[in-house]
Amino acid sequence: MIDRKATKKRVLVIPCSGIGKVHGLLSREATYLVVDELAPEETDTLCLALLVKGDPEALEEVRTHKCIAIDGCAKACAQKNVEMAGGQVGKAVQVASVLHDHRGAQPGTGSALTDDGWAIARDIATLVASEAACLRDGAEGDR
Image 1: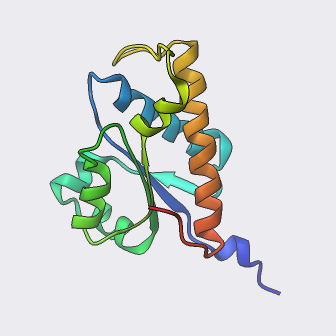
Image 2: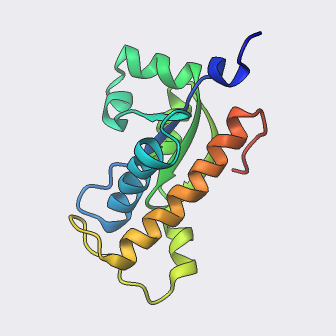
């Protein structure tokens, strides 16, 4: 008997770069929480810069896996670059939208998160891990 869970592909979680911005740091730390802790067997990530640069392996990965983009701002660089590379974004998460649920929180700086920031990163990661499970099971995420 074939174990269907073992044969399913991992969902790629692609964070924005957002260097020097707390929103970018939140997207990256949330991604690491997902791929290292919350859903390591179901998810993976790759460097957005490789995708932007047109790296053949990165392009192949996004074209053959369902993706979740985590963007720090409304420019949606991660989502747009996955789509321009021919990938399918099953869920697009905006850090700024999640921050609305944390009014008054001080998440930190572009280089270090506060306790508030880590709580927000974990909220984002929990959402992304749940969406990844839905995508792996065949459900379409909300964009």
